[in-house]
Image 1 (spheres, helix red, strand yellow):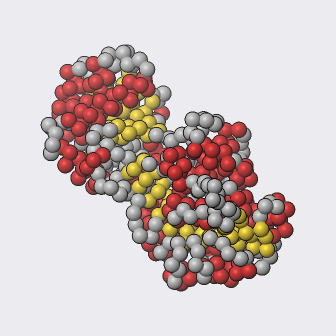
Image 2: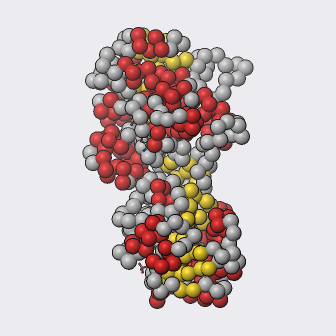
Image 3: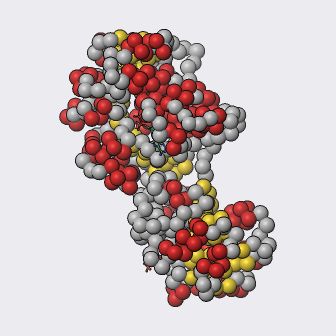
Length: 489
Ligand SMILES: NC(=O)C1=CN([C@@H]2O[C@H](COP(=O)(O)OP(=O)(O)OC[C@H]3O[C@@H](n4cnc5c(N)ncnc54)[C@H](OP(=O)(O)O)[C@@H]3O)[C@@H](O)[C@H]2O)[C@@H](O)CC1
Ligand SMILES: Nc1ncnc2c1ncn2[C@@H]1O[C@H](COP(=O)(O)OP(=O)(O)O)[C@@H](O)[C@H]1O
Ligand SMILES: [K+]
């Protein structure tokens, strides 16, 4: 599991750790890790041309100390000082002593650089880049150099992943002590590039529950419901799918396709698309009536392509089993029907559906995903999986939000959300709690898409569903397979 903590939590942990250590040790640990990552990228440090973008705080200090280490190994290092009168003094002195220099004009060294280190702001940054930094950041991005962000890409909001204004775009972010939420949540995540964590000894000082966490293969492997000697199809869990309509039979077929690959022992479909479902999946138990006629299930998926069948949504929500509501089901949702429920409810909106549930514009949800998913979970008293460029899962009672690291834009294809809802519903039927079911489903869905995309694109939702068994195998046997889907970091 990768964990991310807020700026406030990082600062408290840092204070406690610093109280036990000699002055400057943490900055030296950070700078050493940063310089090592840079040396790895450069291959040959001697003779490399390195430019440091240095702001007024400790983020600039880390950058100067790392620059000094590279200069000692023979790199030509020029520092662009964005706040010359407030530059980290000891760091600058170290750089100059190691043979580095201060650049009078930022643009000339940037044009010839092999590597740029962004030390304008880290966790002390507020708002987007200031006007004087904008042309410098653009010149860095426009050059042929590899751009490495120090701790965070300057200009992004560490705690939320929001980007208010302009922010630097890095190829790699070397972050210290712990991930910050902004490194795992778009739009900020899109500015970070690959992310590498440098251990500076902060771990033991951080709270046990992080703000945000991202699953890795081993976490998902532990959650997967595997059949044992005592299993039968009912004990493995039965998932009911109430989806599709005469107009949208395909949504039912795709939700069932996902449900069949989620580890439940059986899938029951009820609704007007029974003929289409049975034609495609003879292993599915089908009926044409209302959900109440389906027989016992351990979870329900309701909503994909269901049209205006609000009665089916209400009927499913009255059942005392975990219920996943998606797509049309979200439009038909009456919040009052959620209040009386004691079994878990999982809502899976995309940004547009989330915006409608919150009564705000879609753009607001996309700009503030973390706040939106938390607000939805609290307001509806349900676990919420917010789909999109970064899929997030929040529980109504708080706790760590899960950020999915596996998504790929190839998933933005009609019907892939239906596959996801079937898959997550199946994991619910198999006994996972709502947060685990939702986040494991998003992970497997993303991994399946990556595996399928490695063989050919564009992807269809059907390709994603068909590749889910390979994704299961991939998380359980990470050494094998197509070599995609390891963590980004
Ligand atoms: N925590 C840890 O464990 C460790 C932390 N370490 C490092 O320290 C970093 C945090 O350092 P920090 O607190 O000095 O803040 P930092 O990010 O350098 O910003 C400082 C100044 O920037 C300014 N400023 C604000 N917004 C701005 C903007 N938009 N555009 C431009 N300028 C802006 C603002 O000054 P202002 O101009 O507003 O007076 C503010 O004072 C952390 O990210 C990590 O790299 C490591 O050394 C190891 C251990
Ligand atoms: N830009 C993107 N990057 C990564 N994943 C995306 C992106 N856009 C959409 N997705 C994913 O694609 C799926 C689309 O689901 P949804 O919007 O419900 O589509 P549909 O209703 O057609 O099935 C979701 O899993 C979502 O997270
Ligand atoms: K930075």
